[in-house]
Length: 390
Image (cartoon, one colour):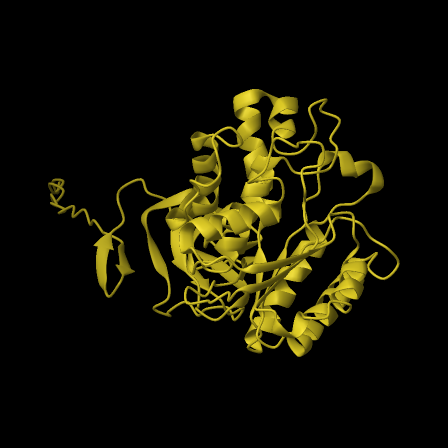
């Protein structure tokens, strides 16, 4: 009987293979960590982007500005790009500025220098995320009007309209904006001018224009300043009509008073005017743009930011004195009935605003001719500080 053969014995080598997934990155490669999952492609650009220039100011006399930027992204924002051109930047342009640290929610205030030519400046911003997605543009605008530090005012001045402090006979040096302006000039430069004042408030722009045409010696004027009282008629009942009359008046002054520097004030809309819907924001905005256009033609016209400076002055005095008293000390009579005439403090601010528009350094002006019985030293400095901050 044939015996059973012993079954063969086999040895099988077991080899365990391992693999590492390599991910290309920037021309090299790196392993994907164990347990890591690949992320879906990010195709969503940053959103909710915004830009605000100088705390949303209407105008500036300096090319140096501060931009408030913000944006969000579902991953992280890595760069932003700023330009005065609306053309969208390419992903590889060297105009992109890297954030110090990538953020999903970005907010920052940064310095920015405008181009030097005067006029309306629009600044655009784009944001880029880690995947290279570029946001749509956000933009804001501001009017650049640069004073002329070499301006000569001569000694024949015409002021069309004035803001006399009706009912405040104790105010002499600051009884009106013209008195305050002239007092500062005489103290600082010691060359008293001849001053012609026509009209104390309450005059429409068209009426001011008509009165200017009746001034016999206007051809010798070296400074023509006019204000808008806040009144309107059918010739200026829209911002566009107002701006048309304004331009016509400036060109008439250029023709009739060829040696004159021209200055004008922005008009302020107080709370009490809301009942008559007399808000001047749109009028002032168009007037700023028109001044920039006229200056680009070589016309010596300057705009005093009375609206902005008076508003800030009232806000500061409200902090010190309360809402009613704070407004009363700048604008309103002793009974706080809002008599619609500046006080001496308001007139000083108007006068300093005009000097600032004409390019004079308000820090170098001599205010010692205005007695402390009318305006305290601290309030004088407050006016100067407000102008410096704007």
